[in-house]
Image (cartoon, rainbow, N blue to C red; front, side, top):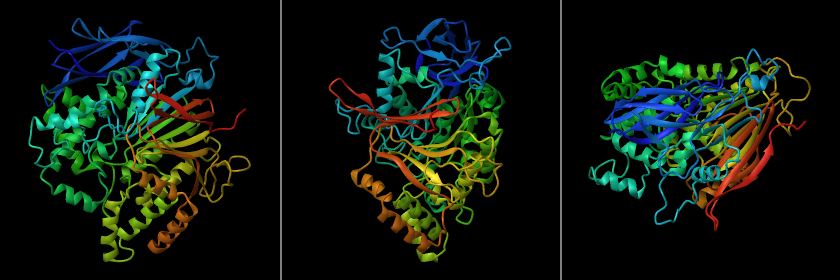
Length: 584
């Protein structure tokens, strides 16, 4: 008899029609999975098989726009979700209201799919999901668990409309004691890759650990989620450089690791990012579902993608009413040859530009999800730009070899470590923020660096203060200054830590002395000036945390909460609440 092994996860909710959603599950055996809603909406799907596991992504149709409805998951005629013994609230699907011909008087924001109280988007990254050992959690309370507990306990609490998980959803290179015991039961941990993940089956252990916590399982069943990978989903500093890639490919265990990593990401994270129309047009999805066992079809896809990353696009675009999200792959899409080094391959860069600049009048807020921060502490930025210049040979071979050692030792592989890509990305943001149809805000949402901060850039022709040009807006050109407010919002970790000496280093990176050292490195590396300067407006904060944007019309507000331990258990403490747009 088939049962529910993992999930359900509510993934895609259609903000255009308000009537469709997708729900991801893993079953214990091949079967047909049904999602049945209290309002009569439903969907069914047979499972597909990968490496002995059985999955379904159920498209639920017939939902009522502007409603919240409870749902159940059935296998055959037997209900497998929610569990009979649960104390948690029902899992629900909330849909946005949409305009109808009988109701033409709705405002633009509501008619485009935005709820009357705005769109709430919570985000963060870097969640090491290991359960506390003996009740003691060495990295402190898990912000995602704490959010789930808070929402489950208070039916009146405001829930996010979507949860953005910006990388490091699992740690293939940093396993918990419980996972290591499972690994040791199937192979000798003295053989490479040791206590790290070796293959697809072992990746499933990580997703079990990450998504089986009862509160998190409930949260992901009722709040839609968008995901993108970062390095630890595969390995620390994944695709740092061409030399790094050559070295890792020479190891006997790497091919299975990268193929399994991409396969498991496709199954557990990527599919749920897609709309039903995108799923229907996806040839890999069709091939995997058509085969009695889709393992080889998916392995072939993953191996071909690793050999030629340009053949696959992991990036995607979502619109939530008049809020546009563009989620960017900053890992697999890299070009690593030193003479052509780029964060995004040319086709990916063109796609990003088009996704950002397409019909700017159709959105009031632009969000770009990048697992890696665009703007770092100035000293760190200058060090990465300097290092990239050395590795490119600006000061000869000896400095280039030294630069590669420093690059790997210091994890120097953010946007600044790809100077041409940084400059081009910055120009895309300037164009998006300029002109008569500019949105109210352009926000780059990031994680990775295990702390949180808010940064505001300033272009040479932009007056200091609020990031806005004075005077009336004009059509964008090479010299036009941003009209929208542009911000880097960095939030990490959800559940992890950072050593105190690294905390001190990040703080020093913002200091005057740190900036002076950065200018010296720029001079030594002959890097030239960056196209923008920037200031830290809030933070840094260190702890397990989540940010939430509340977007209503052309207004935007930001909240940062941290999970703190107390006598009554973990609590969410607000450490920042501020408007990002002028009041009135």
